[in-house]
Figure 1 (cartoon, rainbow, N blue to C red):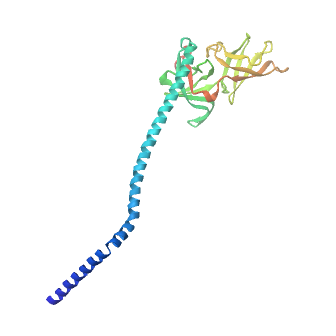
Figure 2: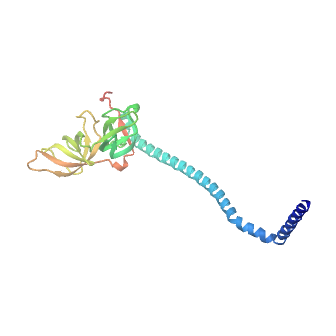
Length: 263
């Protein structure tokens, strides 16, 4: 029993000696083998660490860039508003009208609450800002845009003067004639009820008159174009080219008129 145990111990001791000898003789080769096998793993782990660091840095830079872009956009909008207000002040409009400045949020044709509106814009002011139905809407240079059609708490829909539901009492430049501007849709206006007894000239300016009671007199609507004096028609026909550019309707003024009573 003891003899067997002693033999096992001698064998184990011999094996250990052999292993140590091998490690000593081939230590460099073993280290190279282990290094080669772990090199790719080390590189992968290092790359993962760098990628995580880079992704974090990129995320931080992206967030900072977005904040800067937002600030630049706000500054640009503020600059436009200031220019818009300066133009109005230079014309003394604040003395002539009580105005509410608003920004446009949608233009021309859009769908709201399942209804498609044409020749309209949405503005970011509503009942909470003192806006009421039928208040006139214009630009800073007294160009008429339209009137308030629908009012909500914090925004409103403006019906453009080109809308098919919009008819306005007008006066023609250099004449004592009164007529109507009639919205045709698709950003177009026609002249209506202009008497053949009066002279009508191309490019004559068209203004609002006070006859209808809704709009202040003297707001610019557009210019006369394409005059048609047809024999069997009782009135002269013509187009009115609107003076506003839809693409430039970023800010507008709503006129608070005393004639319109709150609902």
